[in-house]
Length: 165
Image 1: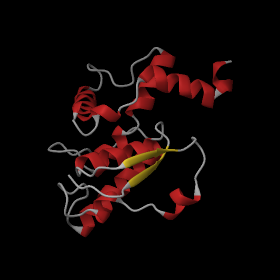
Image 2: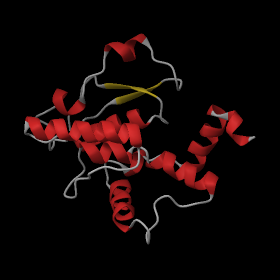
Image 3: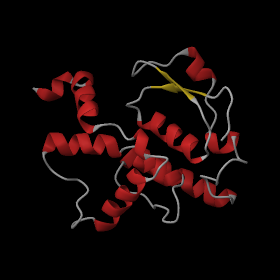
């Protein structure tokens, strides 16, 4: 495991922080998590924002594909996930860049399912996506980071108070 002065700055509820934490875990890079208030960005956060796979390329398996074209495609689909949040081409053999991009939303999807009393990922209607989500959430690099649904739902109620009306 890599040790050192790696600090991850952000909010526990942020899907983008979740992505970084999963990537660090996959690379076996130890880090200190510095909690910030959701919605704020300190000067330290803005100044120090490398991409984990490029900063620690010799540790663990690569999250991004090795070929430049394939990396561009992965980044395209991750941007698509950021914009659409519903579809992606997912790797099947190990967790990669696209899995992290989409999987980091699963905690928030569970909150939506809880509030709507309706399953978005249904074992019978979307079996492949459902199985992928199960595999992703149970991976040792991801499992300890998945937020508790009730805690995240309570956070959402504070963040979006008008939604309850």
